[in-house]
Amino acid sequence: MALLINIDVPEIATAERFYTAAFGLRVGRRFGTGFVELLGWPAPVYLLAKPAGTVGAGSDKRRYERHWTPVHADIVVDDVDGAVVRAVAAGAQLEVPAADTAYGRIAMLADPFGHGFCLLSFNDRGYDALLEA
Image (tube, rainbow, N blue to C red; front, side, top):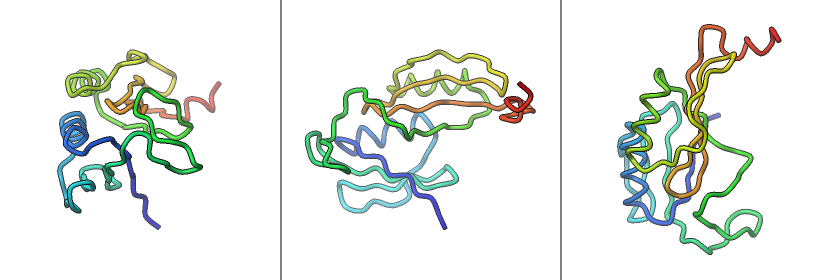
């Protein structure tokens, strides 16, 4: 098995600039003008141009203002605070500032297209710290 990450965006150029600047990803391949592969994470990321208002899964219409979804990316980094600065400079919206937890440090953000994500660094106990509670 393999994992691929697909992210619908209203247009590719802005999304490519954001994801490469915020996370250091690089373009792997281009599949025409509306589909690009980004590399640099353990799973490849595919940006897919899908205009707002078009029908997506479950007959829901795509929208790119901030929205809630039960599935989001937790991006594990060495330095959450530095990663927040980089992501915000690239166009992310900081929603919950970085804070320490039992398992490490976490911040909650959204990309310019309304997709939420977390920046996370684990301490030496990681999620095992939650078993101790």
